[in-house]
Image (tube, rainbow, N blue to C red):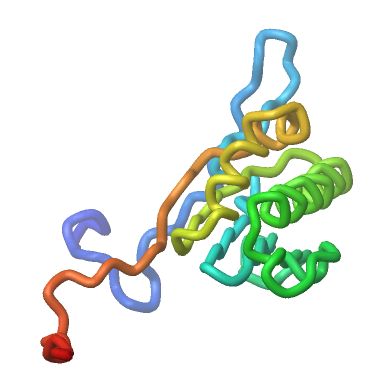
Length: 160
């Protein structure tokens, strides 16, 4: 008779899968949460020449809150100002703090898109006292601004 270990596992039987690894424990015996199990929320900052839009999403990608220069009370050309971007950042930081209190421990990934004044305002707001509670939650900072490399041939120069 053949030994069971001499043949490879069949598709029906296979090897049994082990369950998830146990949580690590500290010296006091309490379990600590592994960083991979903490959900990572996303904060998107889109800043263009005309407006700044900040969106806070859950780990799946569904929006939790969003603010723009217009929703913060700025009209027309003021929506693209530094102050409008700063107000968007401060308001979204309050929503992140509320979510962190409700859900417990959260991680935040910050993504920038565009070259408007709101981009600089978001960075400065994160470093001030309004962003002190959120700064510890931010783990990843990325830039998703599309930059044209090569691309199509541009139109010929206009001559007068």
